[in-house]
Length: 425
Image (cartoon, rainbow, N blue to C red; front, side, top):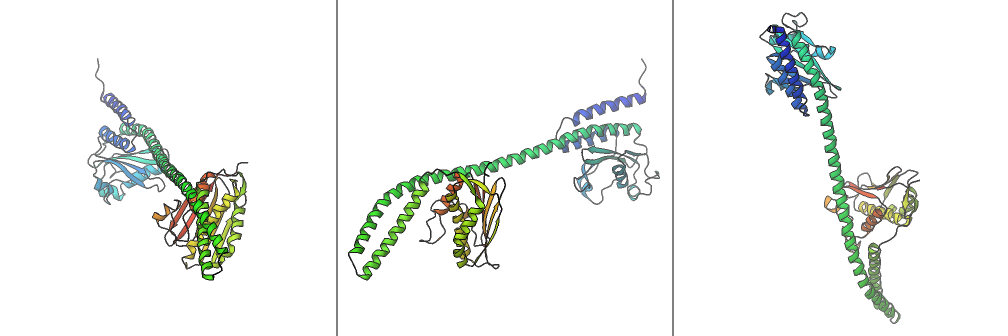
């Protein structure tokens, strides 16, 4: 049996190496590992002194080294990075492979500064394409002329073709992994928000039950006190005594109002469902408090779109709007911003319907913001509030399927953003 010729042995060896490269390239979905494997195979198969893979960066198109052999990392990132830029640019421009047995003698490159500076001899460079990304596989040998021939070029092109498929899979895998991580991050945030809402709801339910018991226990004594004070005012005409009795009567009435609010807060209610024009509700409420806002020199700016229809209870929604506006008024009353006190009211149609109440008042720190809807929590002085207004607002919004967000910074103001489900046709 005749022995295979040198060319046949070389071709068989190249085929075996190509198959091995194909298996290795398809064994990983890690892009960097794919490129490193490609570089290993190219240098081993073709006997190059050095090898380099450059990939165009998305957006900028700048060639970025991704893998190299025979070059340390300092060389790759440094200014003295030694490869023929003329050869690489030519391959990128034409999209065709380039082979030269002796770059110093090749008329295409012998005038190249890099070729002469680095005394490059054999150079082989083939394009590497994967989707929209382009790059090159670059091999050189500074000592040996004719180190690469047409068979080496064909083999490197074949390996580059295999690598392109592996790179495409790796890039797709990276994109899917990033999408999965982004999706998981969104899910974690949504879960955290849901847990916070459930915690807030359970806390308010517990406080509501407590408030109902306390309100009933207090209401009867208050009624007795009020009745007796009223009787006493009818049997005395002494001015000082009447003054004191009226003062007690007013305090008792205030206590009864607080109890009434406690009962309103704690009592389960059925929301009246009808189509409500949220822009109209905002406009009507602003008319009611226009004089009060004027006392504090507050400028009101409105952006109320048409078609802001939601399904809900008009009385409760008016209560929500009024609470937000009055809280903004109180925040503005405590400061004098350089541009004047400004209250901005916005209503935007869409899915969801968006309502925003924004002021440039004193704002609030994070510690206050996290407790703003907590029953009985208030930053106002004693006698100015009992901390139930925004708690009731939160209950109303929850019943309406709305989500509320607060953006507030100390000395910069506060924005309440509420998203309502739109009224379905």
